Structures are given as C-alpha cells and as structure tokens.
Image 1 (cartoon, rainbow, N blue to C red):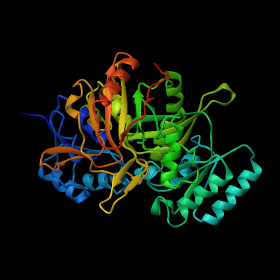
Image 2 (tube, rainbow, N blue to C red; image 1 turned 135 degrees about the vertical axis):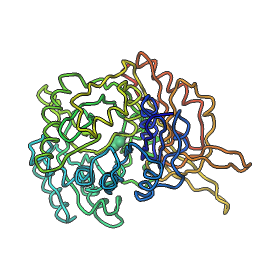
Image 3 (cartoon, protein in one colour; image 1 turned 30 degrees about the vertical axis):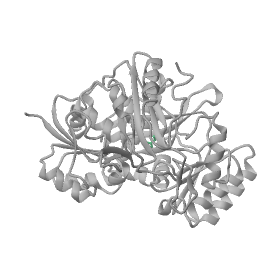
Image 4 (cartoon, protein in one colour; image 1 turned 90 degrees about the vertical axis):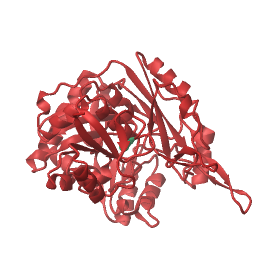
Length: 472
Ligand code: GLY
C-alpha cells in the first residue's frame, strides 16, 4: 500500500484529533502517535508508536527507524525543547516552530516585549524578576487606578494555568507571592512574572497556520476555561475549601472543559482585523528579526468592547493548537491535512484555500472530579478534582455504549488490567475524555455530545453541563 507515514507527537485529546485529521487524508497510509494514549490506536490507520517513546532522542530514533515522512508536534514542551531543530538537523520533515520561535509561549515576558516592539496591540504591562518590586508595583497600581485590576502571569510554561486574573489588590499580592515565593505554584516558570492591566470584553482564541512568510486563519472555537458553570456555587466553594485556596468563590481556570466550533462572534470583519493588526504583523515582525515562524499559532485575545468597538488585544501567544479546541475545530476541516502540512513545510501556504464543513462540532470534557478514597488505615482521603489534586487509575465504563457517530477523543487514558485481569481503559489525568457531537445545528451537536457522555462513567467523573447553552 503506498502513502505517507506520519508521526504525531502528543499525549492528549489534541493529539487524537491531529492523528484523526491525518488519517482522513488519502495521501496517508499510517499514523503513529507518541507518547499517545488509549485513544490513539482506536482510529483507522492509527497506532501507538513504540510504547514508552517520549524523549526527543527516542522519538528521533523511531522516526528514522520507521522512515517517517512527516512528523507533527502538538504540545509546547517539545517545541520549547528544540524538537523541530533536532529533527531538521537530521534531515527529517517536521511541522512546528523551531526553538527560537517557540519562546513566544516559553517566555511570556519575552513575548510581551517583542509584541510591544512590533506595535502589536497588547494591554499595558511590566515584567518583574523580584517579588518585592512586583508587590510594590501592585500596591502603586491599586492606589493610582481605583476600579481597575491586574492579571499576574508566570513567565514560563505552566500547562495553560499560569495566569491569575485578580479582582482586588489582595488577590494580586497573593498571586505574586504564590507564583514567585517558595513553595512556588508553577516552579521555575515563576522566576519572572508579567503583570498586566486586566482588560474587559470578550476572550477569543484565534488560530492560524504559518509557513514563515504567509499566515492563514483557521476556524476558531468558543472555549470554556472555568472548571464549573457559574451556577455551581456550592461545588466551587467546596473545590476551593479542599484546595486550600484563599478566594473561596473563585471559579478556577482549567486547560478547557469543552467548546464548540464555529465560533459565534468571529465574523469576517473581526477575522480581517485580527489578521491585519495582529497575525500578519507578528509573522513579518519575527521574520525581520531573522525568525521564520512555521506551524500552528494561537493568539489568546481580548476583544475590548469599549466605545462600541471591537478592538483585539493580545493576551498571550501559544505555539500550537489548543486543547480541547483542536477536538472541535479539526473534525470540521475538509482540506487534506497532510497536503496542508506539506504546504507549510514547502513555504507554499499561499496556494492553499482552506475548506470547512458547515457542520457544528461541540465537545464536552469528562474530567477527574472530587473523590473520597477510603484508606486501609480507615477514614478516607478527599481530593478536590481537576484542576486541583485528583485521583487517576480509575477504570472507565460505558465507552462501548457510545453512538459511533460521536467522536471520542482521549485526553488522559491508558490500557491496563483490572483486579480480575480484564483489559480496561483507565484514567491517567485530570482531563480524561472529550466527546464531540456533530450536526447541522449547534443544538444537534450538543444533544449528541451530552446524550453520549451520560453513557460513560468512572469514579469522580464530572463535566460541565452548560457547553453551548445560550448559543442554540
Ligand atoms: N485550551 C487552552 C489551551 O490549549 O491552551
């Protein structure tokens, strides 16, 4: 059988969705996923690469040994560690930004300075290395700007959880301490912080693909970052109490609890504005500085609605696709993903016109929620659940009952043996599964996702019930 061999490097639901997109290409014969999860081998043409292959040298050895035609990297960690550089030096074709470009996500302080120098719109900010100076700045800000607030961000990679949005001086001071002072919430990612003015408006994740000189917008997705729906006040308080969080009513941020695509606010006018003021200037500004950005890029934006306008500001840049955004965007892509990847590598994006299905996709994440585990010594240990401390290694039931038209992407799962020696799928992380419903309307997609997620269960399983609510 002729066709290309692809390696997708990712261990989550985004990796399942990327592998699925490659598998739909008639150019592709085989898709290997590494490190992957229990969902990676459930899709047509897809299998796990050698078990345990997760370091960059191991992955390089695999790609060379298997004569992989194209490698696609999902998460930021590998990109920041220079995976693309190493593969390219070995003469392999790999999609993703090189290390010098991945620093846009790897250092928020660097990214802010660069965007400011390029004239890309960003909120007013300051970078700090010294917690005392950061605290002093917070004090002065609140004295001089009554009614305004700040966001405190760890400089380095923090699994998408490094931003603390504050509603008072006390919260901002506590955020500085939690990030910068031992025991530091995000470890060395908190060596420096960005402190920026909190903007109000609508948050929008804007995805695009670049080949170093051209950049093409992708479709977007409405995302749901907070762990609970706003009305789950009791659960929010319980979560904070069990987590020892100082602000008992704060609905914590996660990597994402679900989403849907297309995005209801991203019309052509706003897309053009973002491309003209943000996306193209970023790619050309990098190029002027000798950095060719290739691969996926995602701009975390705040669309300020002040004065009746819709002005986009960059809150952060990520050098990858979002998770779970990929799970609802990629199934709608009708353009061949392998040919798109080839065009990125051949600096030929100008020849591509992306095509999208008119269907809606809606994804709901099943996460590892609160569990009280009984201890052999008697009593029980209670954990608040994702995004806080959570239990893993819970057997998952009911996957076989899911309607085959519903896509089940796995975020954190592995195959193992249960106490009776039966092969089962177990939870391995905070986010466990993303069920994606699809339909000609958002309502149809939503019904499919929720009807099917109810067929699945594992100890502590929880999901938000309001994904897509209010947009039908
Ligand atoms: N869903 C947000 C992220 O992937 O960073």
